[in-house]
Image (tube, rainbow, N blue to C red; front, side):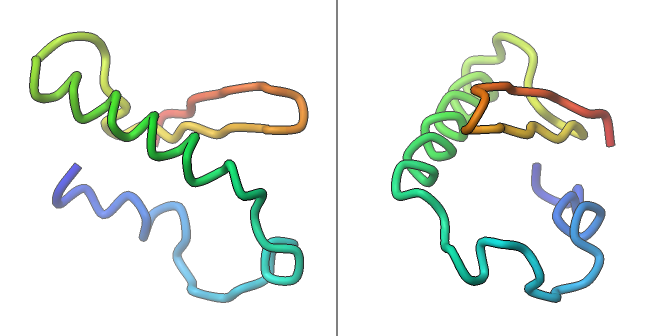
Length: 71
């Protein structure tokens, strides 16, 4: 959400040190994340459902596990 500074809380430094630096991301990852972002936007606009405000959603595409953590 605007003003939450969530990315700065999750990634306090800008060092590129993950495996994605060398391997990249699977091509379907942006489509999955975009669809979740669209769903979140619709929930905000329609004032329905629980939104991910001040929570982190992690997705393990290898095991198909989704987890949320409070920030």
